[in-house]
Length: 179
Ligand code: IMP
Ligand code: MG
Image (cartoon, rainbow, N blue to C red; front, side, top):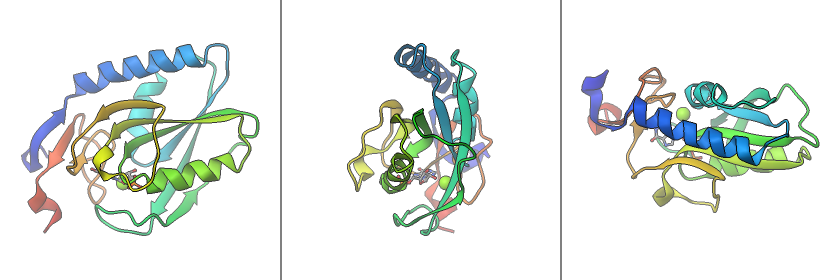
């Protein structure tokens, strides 16, 4: 799969040490609390698994799945919930775990939906951020890396369902997604 990359943007080691920093911050901020982590499938599954093993707090873990009506590398903002929460989040401290914040349209919709369920608090934790692409104002509470406006894959992120299993994050060769 490495032959399909322009470059490795973030190595497995860089990702791992950044996740340790994020985990420390979350443990400080939520000391003595019992938050619910909500992973947004599928992209966040690798990040979620690594982050959770570095968080020494009593907490719940749940997942949601959403699909945007757009296709390929663009999102339209119209979001459909394909897997809802399995637990009640009323009066809970919620932390949403995402792979990447791009236009922000998906997360904007999701955060609104979660707030309508009356949690005590909702914060957003994203591994990657492409601030140059933002279409709605949304600022993550915990962030791994700002990245340039390039299409990246690996560490949970896909192109057409491929590359999620790469241990690093790479920039995909444009000829692959223009085929
Ligand atoms: P947004 O609604 O535009 O912020 O889109 C966020 C979603 O688009 C992410 O959860 C990813 O599934 C997908 N996405 C955005 N940029 C990339 C990328 O560079 N690589 C892979 N998926 C991406
Ligand atoms: Mg995706």
